[in-house]
Image (cartoon, rainbow, N blue to C red; front, top):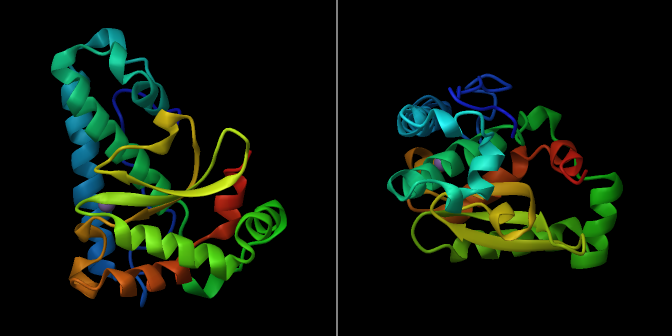
Length: 205
Ligand code: MN3
């Protein structure tokens, strides 16, 4: 992602209530206006005293964490990851009325690798349920451009290990607890109803 310091929280590409009844309005307001905003504010605060790193993009910061001064490296990793991951999360969702099953190249790659879109969803759900504590499940392509399902902890991002992220499932409790309580599996089923597969497919190139 190409934005740099001072980072901003882009507005949601749909209304806060657009994903009802699958993802509730209250969760969307908190998730976007409080959680993502806090990552943006913390990242700006961390970089405010380091003008030499203010030209770096979000992607550049995450890829070059090791070149940052030790006193800000961990904070930048967590908060730049938080900004990147949340912008990606919100930008891949669609109001349920507009839901369309995956098509084109992504559908073809999914069939080759998993057998069907439903089989991919089963893999994603298994991975999302396996995340212990806070983290994310992902659909990515690996170095050979083959689809893979992976998980990461906290706000880590798979592109730091050379993978290309296509879809992120946020399984931090703040993503679902207001509506789904401790029933992460139900949240994941509901999340599948609002994925914008066209956006996910665009991330292949
Ligand atoms: Mn989140």
